[in-house]
Amino acid sequence: MGTLLKWFLVLLVAFLLASEVNLNTSLYRYEDNQVEITFPVWQTDTPWYYMKWNPAKGEFIHHRGAKPSK
Image 1 (cartoon, rainbow, N blue to C red):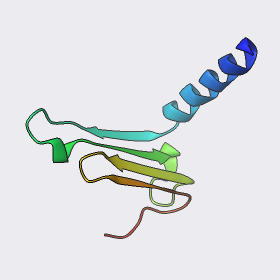
Image 2 (cartoon, helix red, strand yellow; image 1 turned 30 degrees about the horizontal axis):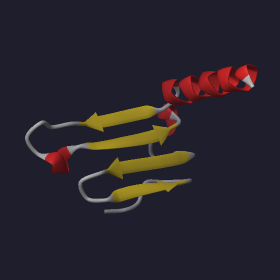
Image 3 (cartoon, rainbow, N blue to C red; image 1 turned 180 degrees about the horizontal axis):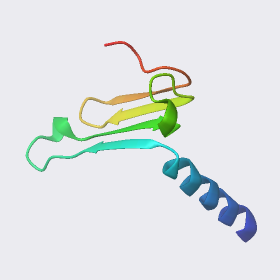
């Protein structure tokens, strides 16, 4: 079990190193706090995986492919 956990953590670190991570934080406006991950970093226009989380708006978007149009 320990070996499986170790490999999972290694893969998670490799995923985050190969990703573009945007972290917006604010002490004064809760609405401004959000995390946005685009994987891989060298393909930000058409990524393989995209995730955005904003806890104030109750927003959790994740999907394969390009970012959603605004």
